[in-house]
Image (cartoon, rainbow, N blue to C red):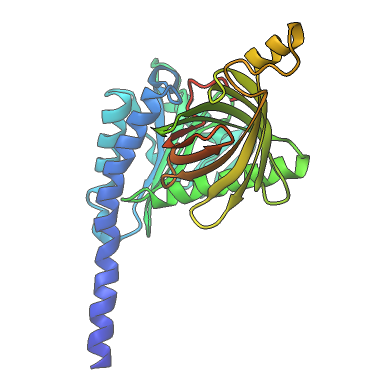
Amino acid sequence: MLLTLAAVVLSGVAHAGPDTTRDSLDRLEEVLELRIEDGRLVPDELLPAVLVSAEPRYVASEDWFSTRVIEVLQGALGEGGIRLCEACMAPRAYVEDGRLAYSTGPADVAEIIRLDEQTRGSSQAARSAIWVDEHRGGVSIRIVDLATGQVRLGQNIDPGLMEHANSERMYSLSAELERRARGDSLTQAFVDFAVYPGQHISMDWTDQWGKTNAQMSGITLSVIDPILGIGGCHYSRVEPLNMLVGGQVVVALPTALARSFSDPDLDLLDPLVTVAGVLRVPFGRSNYGGVLTISTNGQVGFGLSLMNISPIPVLL
């Protein structure tokens, strides 16, 4: 019974790899197209390209893996620009200046250039080298500029792009920890539209700080409640739901100007100082959230908060 169960389980594992590879190659083609669309990969700068390695991991993949890799690369980068280098993974012998050199294993950039020079004839020199290999979770790709040695793309691809998402998350975490170590501030911008039943519309520019980045302090600009004002704001991030709780202290500019030129006790349109409590609740990981405001002018409003939307003038 145990041997039978083990055989069934191992059989399932053995067939899971190639099945995953097919889906991963489909994702790879889509990722290449996305990188070309956003300008991170330019086919004219990569072609002709030498396909150094298209190495399958499983026996079941050997008959089709290399062919499918070439189809994916040609579909994304263009036909006629991919050169398959069979010698790049085979043992190689060179005789130069009375010296015999024998090497095995993957070729380095200098050796790829030399192999391309020996075999391309009168064709254009290769501009990049590409490695696409199968692994347990999917496929890996590496594209290297042969002129500079720069890695133009290096990524593991799985059917759900989970590894890519995890890599992006860890990269973001590393960048964040380095930013904290340097003591650099992080600017956040908010636009609040609390319109029911009262109205409170304001824009905040804050610096995020503190040991855990849980504090935000900055300036605020109000266009309603008060009708036009400028002041300061402070918020703290609290659990659950990453809520921001804080407040704004705003000076009404029309009232301040009126008091400076006439009666010091005159309130024009709004009191001189307005204090507003603010609660923001983000919608998941999006740049939108709900907002609740309560001000000393008697305004209580619910509405929408826009968080770091790109048209907002904020440090990018």
